[in-house]
Each structure stands twice: as structure tokens, then as C-alpha cells.
Length: 252
Image (cartoon, rainbow, N blue to C red; front, top):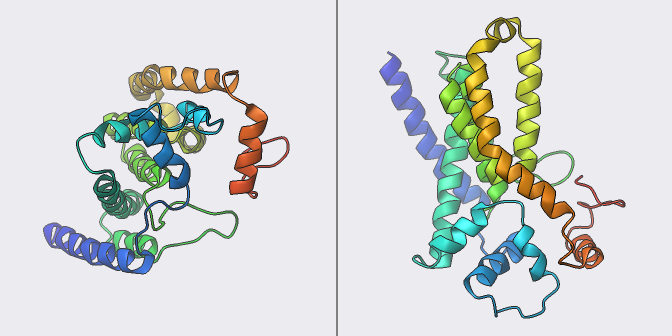
């Protein structure tokens, strides 16, 4: 019976993955990629944007995955690579949503299928602009998929998996990784079962701190970097996304 449930979930997952692609469509050179693709190109050819004051700030872009993509793009056509990443991220988000639902309601067939259907219908937040499921590859969507798997592992007491995917989510998007870490910490403190077994989580927690500390330190160090025109960056960012920055600048 359990094997049959898994088979149904997988079949539904494939169908919902295809439906979600049909609903959202696919774009490239859209949204945040107007910044991210020049970031890749500037790494591949340092002379491509000479004296560009905005591109000069991209070395501080807070997601190492784009540097990794720039390396991969030397072997794979960039447009094909980003398409593959888009498809992988969409599939992973749908899988992660099912996994998360299953961790909250083990044995249920409706929970994982319902979670996948919710993602496939391209949910949109009431406030702001979400990047959970959008029509182009975005590192935030990938980070959310990693973090959903991490939260599922937390509720399933799979501590090694929790460490791996929380770390991946943190490195992919440090802001969302911080949000998830706070939510997990709050759940840990609120739940007596976790508090009574806190010793089991010492090693995974310390491992997470050790692995993410270099990235956290480099991100904090970049805040005070003086190699670029900070005011110019803020002005351009406000023009690109006026709802995303306020004065003083902060994330909405």
C-alpha cells in the first residue's frame, strides 16, 4: 500500500510539474537576470564592462551560485544552462513541497499531492513580489527548495540531511537562509521534545555554523566595502525595483 502511494505521488508530481511549466511559461534575460547575467559575463571577461559603476558592485553579489554558474558556462552554453537550472529548480520545489507535507502528515496521500498542486498553480503573495515559482531561473527559488527540504528533515529528525540542506539554502540565499534558521530555532525552543533532546543537535548545529561562517563573514565584510559608489548603487536599485528599497535602504 505504501509503495502504491509513493507511485501515485510521483505520477502526480510529474503531471503537476508539466502543468506548472505550462502555466508559468519560461523567460530568460528577465527580472533579476538583468543583473545576474552581466555578473556572469563580467567574471568571464573582465574587460566587457570597463569602468561600469554598477557592474563593479557585482563582485559583492550575495549568492555564490552565480559565480559557480559562470564557471559552468565556460563548458555549457549559458542559455541552455539557465534553462536546465530552471527545470531542475521547478522540479525540486515541487518535490520539496511534497516532502515537507509528508513530514507534517506522514502516511497521508492528500497532503503531498495537495502541496504539489499548490506550488504548480503558481501562488502569488499578497504583499511584495515572491520568487517561489516564477517564469525564469532565480536563485531564491532554488534556496527555498533547499530550505523546504531542511525543514522537512528537521521535523523528521534527519539531522545530517538538515545540516546539508540548510547549508545549501544559506549559501544560495543568505537572507532566506537566515529567515529559515530563525523559524527553525523558534520551533526548537517551543517544542519540548526538541528541548529535551538538545544534545542530539549539538554536532549538526556546530557543523552548520562552521561551514557557513566564511560566507557570513565575507557578506558582512562586503557591507563596508569602499571600492564602489554606494549611493549610485542605491539609486540604480531604486529605479529597477522601487518597492524593494526604502530610505534608509533595507529589504522589504
